[in-house]
Image (cartoon, rainbow, N blue to C red; front, side, top):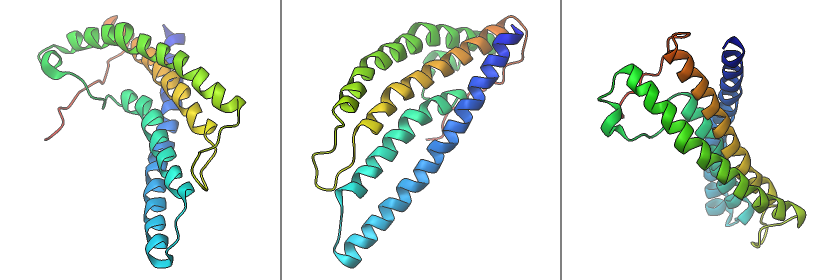
Length: 179
């Protein structure tokens, strides 16, 4: 179990760093959006490349931020049962949900999105818009993002099993979002 917990900590550390890069992408997207708007109104100039890079950064934020959000237990969940369960019950629900739902979906989406990326890479696909960007790098974000989410799911499975067996105390408090 010690090896698995070390593996889990390594996965968590990786996704923490990737999550930080997704946070930086939010800032870059805002700066590019503001700069693009200022240039468009001040100099009557615009480029599709600036718009596309914002879309790329948004896709990066979503796909790479998902594993970070899951690691921090801040993902969206169905609360109807979860809030009424004990901590042990919540750990069991998380364990089964991750094994039966998250991992299969992530594996399927990783496998389905890989050929989508490979076709784009093989043809060196570019945007059809004037001044557009190369497409294959952003298409790589799909399989990598789903794979990172699956790997984080494995980390969460390890932690839930360790907590259920009493090896660790799991700090998996879930706070209902304020609305």
